[in-house]
Length: 279
Image 1 (tube, rainbow, N blue to C red):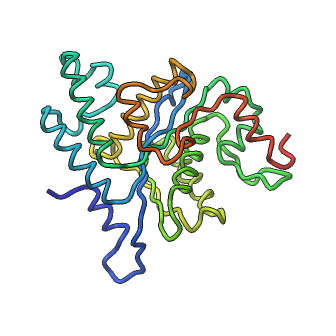
Image 2: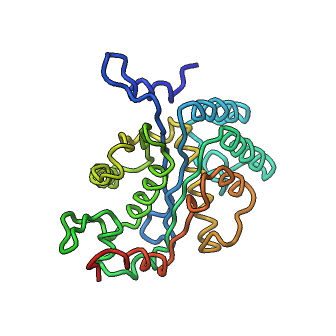
């Protein structure tokens, strides 16, 4: 069986004599809560070397075949709410399939990353502060780029990028594959390109791409994590209430406690307070 991850690896590791990066981290990220009425926004996913991603892909395909689910029908919201393809499933069958997908993720040893924010708390910040946390470059006196002050997603995307960067050893390069629609994809590329120019990031960050989730088991795993985290944050508004069930399993392999976080107003303001002349 030809694996999707092997096809991507050939792009990252060309066989035409060019310099190769032999140690690569791949990060797959997805989002929940970017619709206009959302109270919470979440970006979540996993990162790992190619080997664990191969294990995930094989186990994921095995699980969906066992339950006779087409790859292009695996969507977390439909599974959890039993809608779409899953609308006739019993609770028992739903639980068994969810457990099989969760086991595929946990056993593959990929590392979870998740950042969420209260949308009202995000919009309680001034526009200047929202520009900064969504990627605008500030030189201490003025903005050099615009940011995206009306889209909390980009703050979370940047934070997840930082976590993956921190978890990528020197001498390795992290590539990002995200599940996004066209309206957001363009600015995501800009944010990533600007962040990649920072001295702390330029040696560790590689490329960014936007494959279709319906064709990509790795993004479907990120979709499952982001949707479960989204529902948990809607109910509890933080991670101090311990996750249970599949979500508790999905965060088990995190590298550090800070790799999973939820931002309230006080945390946002504390982060901004350290920026010079950012009043």
